[in-house]
Amino acid sequence: MKILVTAATAAEIGPFIAYLEEHGQQIAQHTYTLFKNEIHVLPAGIGMMHTAYHVGKALLTVRPDLAIQAGIAGCFHHDWPLGEVVLIHEEVLGDLGVEEKDAYKDLFDTGLWKENTPPFQGRSLFNPIDRTTLRRAKSVTINTVTGTQPTIDKLAGKYAPDIESMEGAAFHYICLSEGVPFLQLRSISNYVEIRDKSKWNIPLAIKNLNQALIHTLKELTDQKDELWS
Ligand SMILES: O=C(O)c1cccc(C(=O)CC[C@H]2O[C@@H](n3cnc4c(=O)[nH]cnc43)[C@H](O)[C@@H]2O)c1
Image 1: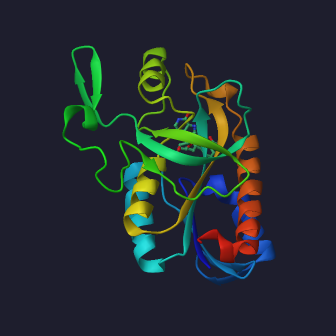
Image 2 (image 1 turned 120 degrees about the vertical axis):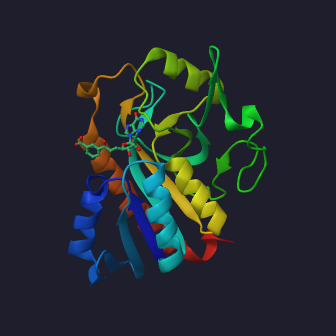
């Protein structure tokens, strides 16, 4: 299988790249063989714009059989442990819309976007693949990391998300539009709360994310024939 592995920053998949260098074989720039797969590695940049451009271009040039987005993320639930890796099965957009009086309306509320316009189902971008042992989670994608109580209340009340990232919805949209099977793995580095970066545990989140990524690739290789049936 040809597999594209993308992250916002190289640091998030640093241990995975080190693993590829040690256990795989480099066959071109950013390209390795591992477990009989051809792995293309792509740090795409933070945010939806960079993800849309770089991942979109890679889908068209590499034509992978599977795309994996791996990254750290914020979590809305304080009883989900820092460092847990989850599989995102549903994505929504959290800050694309208009402010009107005291209310926030997204583009579906305004009528500028219509529900169920492909690849949306309702107002969400779902991943039809669901075959890992990881906890499934719903994520909201935003442009500004949430750090105040009114924004937490707005997002939690409107979308009931588990997780927050800055790229996930763009990744789902691109892969669904191009018909490329995909997985989005997110490791919890922090809680979505009033901002205090000293409480984030990025090293733990990155360590667990990369272990889960390697484990997932091994599992996928073993289950290759039944995965897409
Ligand atoms: O400071 C560092 O050492 C460091 C190392 C690796 C990555 C980073 C990042 O800042 C990655 C940005 C990336 O993280 C996602 N993220 C993480 N927490 C949240 C959140 O609470 N809300 C939204 N996004 C979050 C996001 O997808 C960024 O792309 C720093």
